[in-house]
Image 1 (spheres, one colour):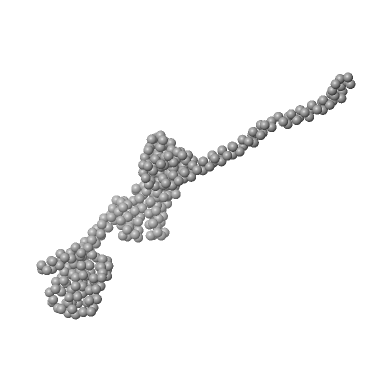
Image 2 (cartoon, rainbow, N blue to C red; image 1 turned 90 degrees about the vertical axis):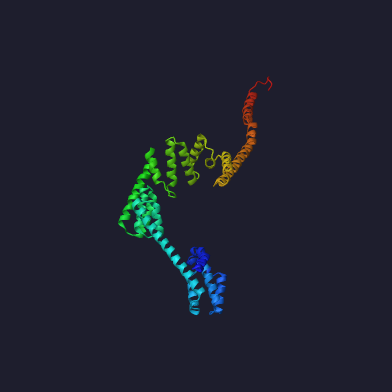
Length: 372
């Protein structure tokens, strides 16, 4: 009994840690491979079998160790060392089966609990946990979609219902639920985009969905509604979110610059958004200054380097345009000066032309006694 306990203490920690997958890997170790080769050369010898069985037990390969020891018992019946190792290996197998049974029972209990929470309490996470194990469970797929509807996550609910529809093509009940969600979302979207006040804001927050085609429009609308309600801080956050979704919108850029300046926000995110907005508005020098401030506060802030490069390109374009305008203005000055120097000359010639005939006429009609 003491010997069995000693062997158990020797291998106990390894026994609980190894499973069949670990055994398949460990069985290829050089030590085990060498022990097998020795046993093949001397199949009747006891020592190689005992050595191999010890290595297999240590690696968690209990079933294979039992097979090696049972073969040894045939050659060396009732050998004390063989019997001791057999009892140890079999106890490890029993122990592993016991714990595997506990794990299985616990997993089944957890699955039942998640099914209940999904179907009865609309717990979306519980539904997801069940679907990991049973991805084709129609009832749970529908229950998840229903739970998302209760959570006002309409776009996610629509996705979940469409997933359920793939599990049950032609299901009229699922089709009806999809149509209901689509109508409901269109109504809320219209209220969001055309309504005012808290009702419109609440509708926008319901229909706002990440990566949806209208995500930018809804986010900008939320910003406008906050701004209308004099909630400058919330409006600025929403405008910054809209700007991150789509660069280059001048209305968003103007709002960000105005709100950052009016609220006095000087954190890195606000300054980076201000710099990006100034790039959109063509104010390159101001953009560079704002972006440098953001970079100093939070080095490595996403997209600041790209916006800085865009601002510098814009500044170079502005400088080239100003230089071109100065060159064009300089080229026009000599032409203007020549034009002014020649003013009056055509008129003078005309006077000469006009006077000469008159003088000739006057000379021809003068009396002979008068000098011409």
